[in-house]
Image 1 (cartoon, rainbow, N blue to C red):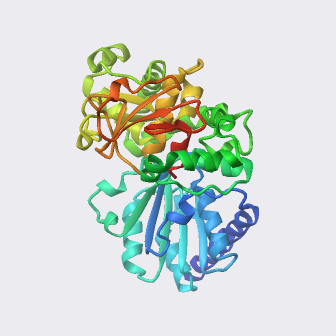
Image 2 (image 1 turned 135 degrees about the vertical axis):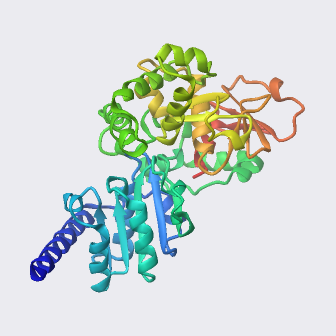
Length: 409
C-alpha cells in the first residue's frame, strides 16, 4: 500500500510538471502587467486577487518563466485540478519541498475547500518555501481570523490601465505617472506623450474594450466573453464563495442590470428593494457582493463607511467595459467619463463623495469631471480643486486631460 501511495505521488508530480512546462512553453512576453514589477516577490507569501479575465494566470507564468525558466525549483499548479478533489494539497507540497522545491505558485485557490487554513499550515511548516497564490476577487480568507493575513501580502489586480493598453497596442514604453506629478506637471507630461502618439485617437477604443486583456485575442467577441465572466461570477462564484442561494442569483443580475441603466446611481434603497422583491438588508448585502466581485464601485462621504452594509451615497459600474457589456444601450458619455476616472484612481488612491464636485481623492484633492466646455464654476475658490477634462490633448492650470489619469498604474 505504501509503495502504491508513493507511485501515485510520483505520477501526479510528473503530470503536474508536464502541465507546468507546457504552460511555460506557451506563454510569451508581448504584454506584461504593471504588477510584475510592483509585487514584493521577495516575501515568503504573497497573494493576487482579481476578477476573472484580468490576467492573474499569465502574470504568474511570466514571472516563473522569467525567473526560474524550466527549473524544478518552481512549480505552477491550479487547485482546479481533479487530483485535489480527493487528495490534500499539503501532501503534494511536502513532496515538492523534499525534492528541492523552493517556490510554488498556486492558481485558483478558491476552488479548494479550506485553502486558507492549509496555506497557513504550509507557511508555518516550510519556513524556506515561498508561496504565491492567486484567486477570485471574492476571496475572504483575510477575515477568517486564522492569521493568514499576518504572513501574506495581497494585491488586488485590476484590469488594464490606459497606459498599459497603449504600451501593448502601440509597442510603446510609457512609464507610470504618479498623481502628484500629474497635478503639478500635467501640461509638459501630456505634451511629451502627445509627441509620440495621439492619445485621444486610442482613448475611445480603450473605453469600449481595453480593460480586460482578452481584447488581445479577440475584439469581436469581447463583450460576449465579458458577459460570460459576469454570469460565471454571479452564478458560480457567489454561491461557492459567499454562500448565496443559487436561486437568488437571478435577483443579483437583475440588480446589476437596473443599476447599469442609470449610473452614476443615487440609490433609494427601499424603492430599489421593493422593485426587486427583497429586503433592504438583503439589497445592501447584494450590493456588497457586486462590489467585491469587481462589478460595481460604491462611493460614500466617509471613507471609513465604504465597506459597511449601509446605503452608499453613489454607485458606479466598476469599469467602462462593463458599462458597454451590461447596459444594452450606448452608455452616456458623461457617465463613462466618471466611471473611467474612479476606476483608474481607485487602484492606488481612495475616493469619497464630496459636498461639491464629483470626487474627493485621498481626502485632499477635489475633482470635477466633464467635457472640454466644462467650467470652473462648481469648484471656484476651492483649494486643490481640478477639472478632469475629456476630449483635450493637453490642459492648463487646473484643467487636466482625462486620459492622463489612465497613466497612474
